[in-house]
Length: 307
Image (cartoon, rainbow, N blue to C red; front, side, top):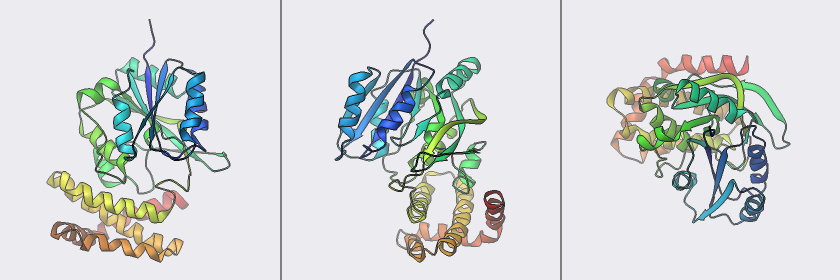
């Protein structure tokens, strides 16, 4: 019986320095029945040449090019090009453990799961792995209230059953330019699904890349505020209350980051709440009122992260 096929989608924009290592980690998988579609999102460096060299040597790797539209549009484009039973998203500068497909496919087939995800860790610009296990037990409640407060789970830690993605018409929202992974996870966990975490298994390695969206706390802060503002109107009333609590915790994080990293530029992002209409301002005022309630969340994060 033929093993299920894993379809890997790699959005890529100007990652010629890293895409080769990412594709090598894919080729190192013990599980061999996979295909990979690399979506070049209008790169201007040597990305296409690097990927094309891999395509010539490995027929499982395919290259498609499109005009620049962001990682969300590139991933959605990739979803139209794959044919596998499972979907693996992978950024062009990250790495996978060599047993990831084998472990997740076996588990998902045996338990008929829609989604599974592993724990993860980081590696730095010197390719030094940092073997500290990170992960979380996810739910929509956790995604609404705690995501980004000391933890997140990168997209390449997940493996999705293709039929689950297609049946529920799940795609990346191309209007979301910041925190599109967070938004995608919220969409997934809104569905009725059967999922499992492979707790303790480091299946995904996340590159600490200064060129990325999360390469500095300034970029992270702006991205978090913009996404919190953008997502609020899409939520149900009860979810909006949880979202307001999440913004309240973000305000504490915003203040502490300014102090810790001496990034006074961080203060400018608060203007976002005063320039985007009455409801956004009301959202901010509600979060300020929740500050005493959200402080324990930040205190617990401090204890976990630093002590």
